[in-house]
Image (cartoon, rainbow, N blue to C red; front, side, top):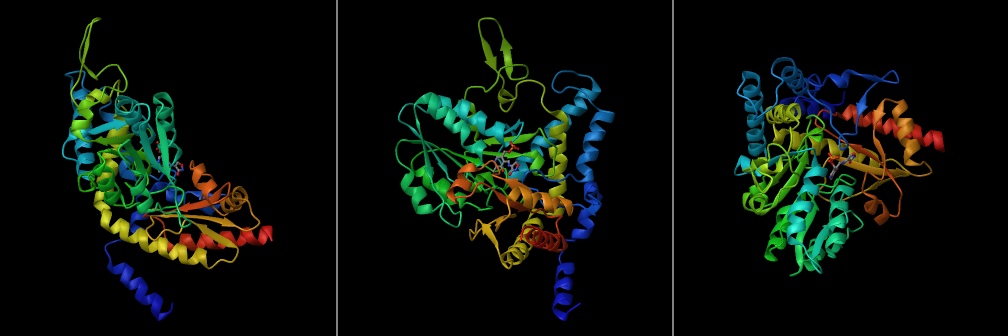
Length: 420
Ligand code: 7TS
């Protein structure tokens, strides 16, 4: 080992972040794929689960499975208390002011659709505008398209530049008195661009336009403080945050939530029902019709505990270091072009390889045990902007290592040999 490498190893060992130790918490990382150790670089699609999260699900189903809010019996009381605890954990995790502002949904997609179908339908009319960016995932485009079509409103787009940045001056210019709502991602899933959200929200608020944030790719990688951001709504998914699938969070300012009509009707979201009139339950239950994903709620709470134990600052710092390492390594490969070169990025490297279709790149990498996503990443307008149909995307989490990045580089070299 070179002296430089020794020093580097020492300095890494000196930090509290011990990736080898962390990897032991994720049973799936011991799996073999095609006889090779799994190198999981598809974390933007969904991340792996620590044993603590898996155990929390088994514990619930084994020891206290019951419906919530409905019975006085002990198991139901325990399940209800566990869900209340999780809501409080989520509140603290994003620094919301009250648990009334934390609504459990299926995921980011449902959170965004909830806002479109309630706040959106109530407040947007003919000639109004909804402003989005050219970076958005389909789930932060299509709900607004549906709404705008229904209301004869206009969907306006701030396009990205060649680096994959939403130019702040263009964003500011696109706002005006008919802008009724802004919907923007915190971090792009296809390119990794981190948006200057606090500035954007300030600009939108000057026009009294509330801002809906798609936080799917931010919540797993950085501190989110909805009050510091002054976000009006903020949605994220449990399954990208090392929690279970089927559960997500929609944060909304209490005054906005109170003014909104319900999303779905059913059990738990009502106070009283007669055939003449129904009155609705208090927040947050007004937006949670039907039996919730109880196991999912418990699981997302366990995931937040886990992330807090590792430490979000340590996670963010480690991932930035790993992203830099990977970006340098991919940049040095001839015939490979990184798509998305914003100065402020998180955990995503999208790239194209000369003479090789991303699908073929993904297939060759898979044979090496390396999981990446290939395709348009549910962000077709981003692909269109760069004049390509698809990319190969490696997306990192805090349990990934430099050795895994080296395996990716070797894998890309193998692809190039194959297709040369
Ligand atoms: N918004 C962003 C920015 C996303 O990355 C995703 C999922 C969603 C919304 C939707 O989240 P869901 O949990 O409701 O499905 N992104 C990806 C991806 O990049 N690859 O697979 C799913």
